[in-house]
Amino acid sequence: MSEKRCIICNKPYNYHYLMFGRGCLDNLYELLGFSKPLKILNKENYLCTRIAWRNHKFFLNRNKKRELAKKYIALNYLNKMNCKFLEDIKEKIAKDIDGITMFSKNIVDTISFTLNDIYKLFNCTQKFEKLIEEFQNIRWEEVDKKIAENFIKSMSFIFDLTKKSNPISYAVFYSMQYTFWQVVVIGGFLTDKSVSAKLLSNSLTLFGQEPEDLTIEDKVTEELLIESIAFNDKIKELTEKYGKETGKFDLRDYEKDGVPLRFEGGDLLYALHKATMFVKALKNEDGTWRLEGEINDTYDFTEFKNLKEYADNKEAILTDIFSTILNNFGVASSEYGVIKTYEVKIKFNFSNYEIK
Image (cartoon, rainbow, N blue to C red; front, side, top):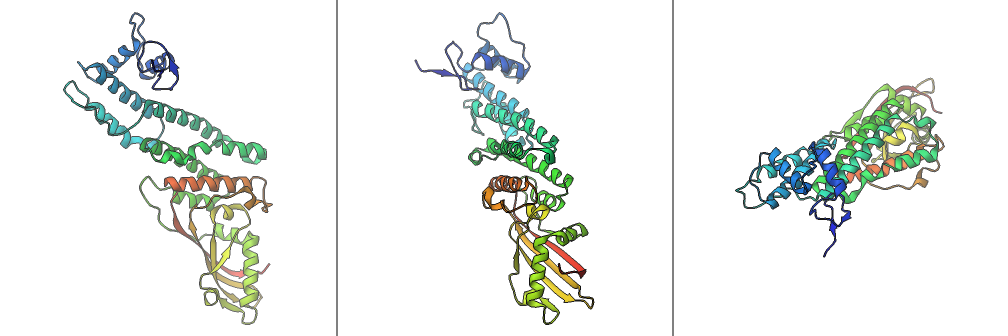
């Protein structure tokens, strides 16, 4: 005799039920809001009958009751998942339920699934909701480096690329990732990472939509550039190379593709990955410079990074962790289509820039 396993939890059992273990059967009565009968021996068959009655299905044979029960239980688990992208799938399952009648010849499976898969997805969402609540309440500036690293890594299960192939798991994991990045965006605005938060937010368009290219031109971003060692060093290098003799230059005359600019830390490190800069410069009589330029980048996450790539960053103890792990999460979300690619341009204009 072959081993029987519960179709919810996949654990083995050895009594007369054909679908559920006793523990899962008890949980289903609670999940669906039915009172468990005391005097009925086969509580599994009774549950399937009650589900049929609730759906106004009468005179179904045993097989149809069981198939109806599977779909109805799956639909209830999906309804308890806080996933905004499941609506189309739930509608299809509800339609399949409507199609089960005493006269129907075949059971239609518009969406293929097992209850064990649905149950595991439900547990994933429960775990995620607890973690994301903790994530929102953490004071990151007070957290030990190792604790922060372990906590961020505890979120890694929602970026599992093997879940993309099934439409239900894809929708659930897409939704969890979308929520995660929305929390990261809010955290960016609250921790003075407004540029990276703005860029990430623009990338998180609704399911099936594409983001528009983004141009940023404001005093806050210009102030970040003024404070950036990488930006100041690059401007000094360019003025000495191209403007020392004439007191003016247009970088496009010398570098048609611009010059690469990699920021050393802070908001701009999170925001820009492979930026290039163009600048026009004119020296003022007082020795300062009039600068007009732009920094261009493709906002995307295409390459997994190692922690050592940020090891030379001395700005803050958590920057290397966040830059690396969040980048790698971003790569996975790009595969899912949660984070989408677009072009970003940062414009700057300084009337009296002092070479540092």
